[in-house]
Image (cartoon, rainbow, N blue to C red; front, side, top):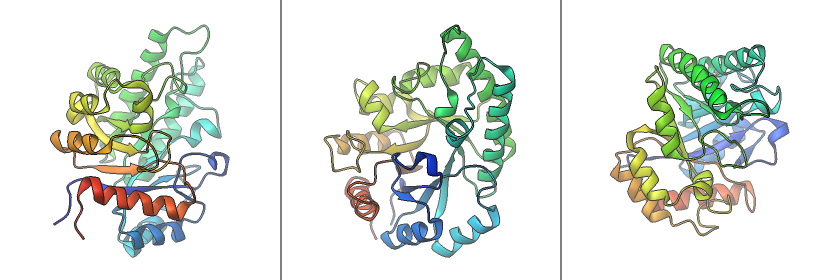
Length: 277
């Protein structure tokens, strides 16, 4: 019998973000082979663009290694092209929507939702937070409906205050979703961001409930679970209590190295989410 909550590990294939919190790097086939050998259920991918990997090739690797594709990130749109959904320039916002649409279509071919994190942007000088949130909502409405047509949800990620001045807490994310016309957007509960912004990670998870569609796990120092002081058992209980049945994906620094980080992650997953092999 297996746990309803599934394990996942991140793979980044974008050189400019090499110092980020991703467990595996560069070699997709080798990384998936290692993830499969450890017993992960899925991988989450960060690619430079929607055409950086052929969907047919990714599908073949997924089948070969018996790994689902849990999600695809869109952060390269900001890192490499400076695109956000809240840029004051409407032409830039339109390009951001187009970039994300391409990522949604790519993910849809492998039944994986796209994640909007850094591409949400900020309220920049001269632009009110209210105006920026209106632009963000406009983008999410268009993209949520587009994702629905592609057969996948859209995942929106609240970020900590040092990365955005828009939505920082799950509670605020739930409120934002309630204003949308689309009903195809879910929240990403990222433990690292939550550790900075939430009074209680457990209470925030319970309050957000069914709005949560994806989870990023990392310890308090953004190393893998078990290398910091995050109280994980209560978080696992809260996710179980709300009936969460998606992925807990390790978006953590590869400390002390990728293989050790991946091993620590799967061991923590088994400890807290009770998977039986």
